[in-house]
Length: 140
Image 1 (cartoon, rainbow, N blue to C red):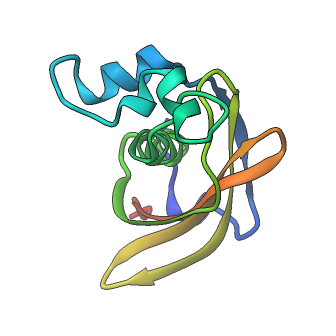
Image 2 (cartoon, rainbow, N blue to C red):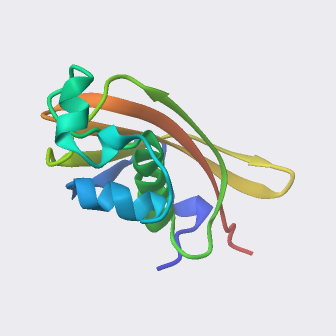
């Protein structure tokens, strides 16, 4: 479904989506042959670092946030910019809820720009906050 700039309202809530990161998902995200931090793929390595288990890669969470915003915006949108701030680490096996709302919309140089605040929540607590700017089509 195409989402048009005119149909978006500031403070509009985006339906939440739940994802459960796993150790295997982290390995697949980076590629099986790619070197990575062992704490992403091994709970014991995470525990040696003083954590509760395997870490969820921050880049994976950014990818999910981007996908979440793009899925909401529709196939005719383009991602203009994303900024994120990491608040705390997430552990593999703990479900994450992606939640968002529209915080700004404006027209610049003939483009309909919509800014969406996206947050990942684990156990109801934010772990990553981000702002995604999307360009949505304007009705002619």
